[in-house]
Image (cartoon, rainbow, N blue to C red; front, top):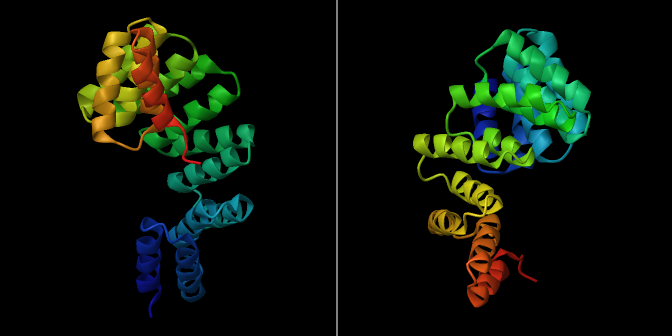
Length: 233
């Protein structure tokens, strides 16, 4: 079997969530084509899905040795460092990815995430705004605003996301959460109900639904909604 076929098989296995098998296929591909940038990168992704972040870092670093201008590799290396709580290293990786590709929406989003961890909220918001300009359906900008207790701005951000993707259950539920913080339970209730219709197994939406119902004095229904939010014993 050729390196290309093994690589393609690894991609298929990765997409199906069969991460150990994907790792094996990528390693077999790299045995035949050891200088494959994408092979090392995708092996790193499989290793991350398996929770082996230190090993993944080695794979991403090898990909970057082979191609120092590989923005995707820097972004993935940043994700691995982020998962290990190595936030300064992650921030540097995302910055390098963006120097190579200023329109890389995922890297803007990820740099926003890590800057929030580093208590650099103003810089984080700038990256979230850029990410959302590139990919309007992202909810991370609204999430950051909500975390900063800027609830009105968060609602506006979620509404922009919903204009781009009206059936986004996460945007609906998160917008409902911000509305609850603004004491607007009727609107929150409608958004939660929409979110749950789109995604029945959505604990966060049920929790927000329970909050809206409680604020509206519908206590029995609120208890039922919150019970749906709890994991099964």
